[in-house]
Image (cartoon, rainbow, N blue to C red; front, side, top):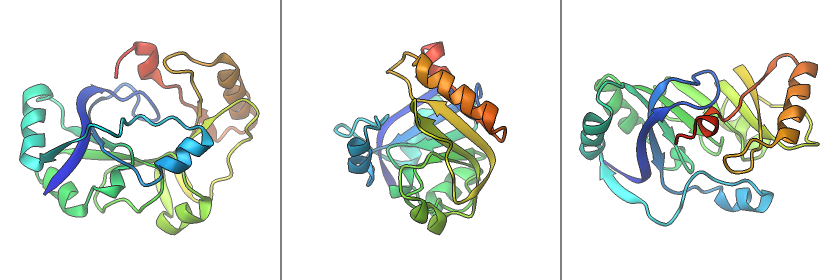
Length: 199
């Protein structure tokens, strides 16, 4: 089994419930929703031109060489569900890894993922078809955008202000703060890794 990977890195989770936790990030190359994101002005974390193919043993070797104490993998992208399979998740589960995923909602996630973060980039009817409930829902908000009306349930609901690169946009931040105050089930999630200046 092989995966086309944009990058693997060991850092701290910067957003949501697991903020500050040591994590091995495996950023899978490519995404079937990238054109929709570009049209809507959403900037993707993935550079789409220079992915490298890894088999599972090569990924494990990288982890053992660069992140040995950590047993948490976050599958991200791009859109990780374009490549990630139940068999791959099971292979890493057998090695003792806790696995989280960050997805746009385009596809269902493989079975046995331990924690699902959904940051919607597709229509609500697509999300509703693929999910009934997730661990956390995260929406990015600009100034002027209203509170989301998700079609599925989550244990945690997050609003994240759209930032200007590594700079926090104060207008967007203040807007998200006010939305959270008006709608208390929603929590504020900053991209803390940008404040820390780490990947």
